[in-house]
Structure formats: C-alpha cells, structure tokens
Image 1 (cartoon, rainbow, N blue to C red):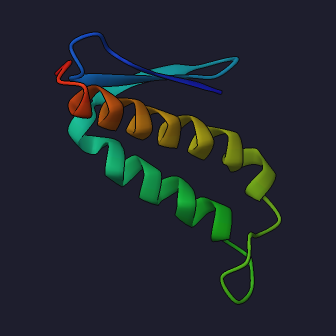
Image 2 (cartoon, rainbow, N blue to C red):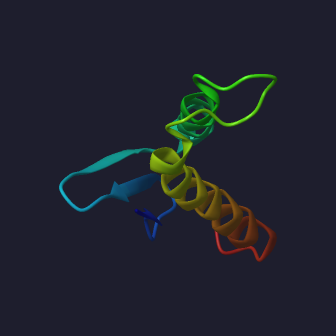
Image 3 (tube, rainbow, N blue to C red):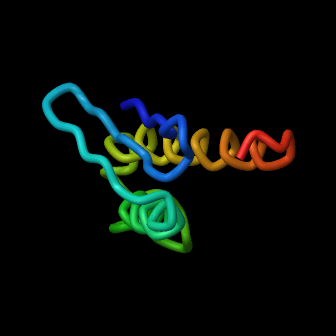
Length: 78
C-alpha cells in the first residue's frame, strides 16, 4: 500500500494493487482512526484482531503521510 501527499498538501492518494482513492487532507485523521479500528476488530483487550495484517500496511502508509505533512509544516514548506 502506498499513500502520497499531494505537492500542494491538500489531498492524499492511497494506492493499492487493484484500487486507489484520493481524499482531502483534512480527512486523514478520520482515515487513520478507521484503519486503527479495523486492526483492532475481532481482537481482545485492545490487541490486534485476526485481520490486522491486512490493514497494517495501509495504516503505516497513512501515518507516514501524517509525518511528512508535519515535517513540511515545520520546514515552512506549506
């Protein structure tokens, strides 16, 4: 899974092997929360569920975009 922050930092493109989507940057926290919930679904005591391995790459890609955005903000690039 690959997530890319647009050059103008207004949108994120999430791309898998068979699909892709582009959404507004302000929806990124909601997408992160959504995938965090999917990872925990079916798990016990806040532990990852049986499907976590399918969602972890997506969550990691989205969190990488969050870090990139933060770095661009700190560097005055946005």
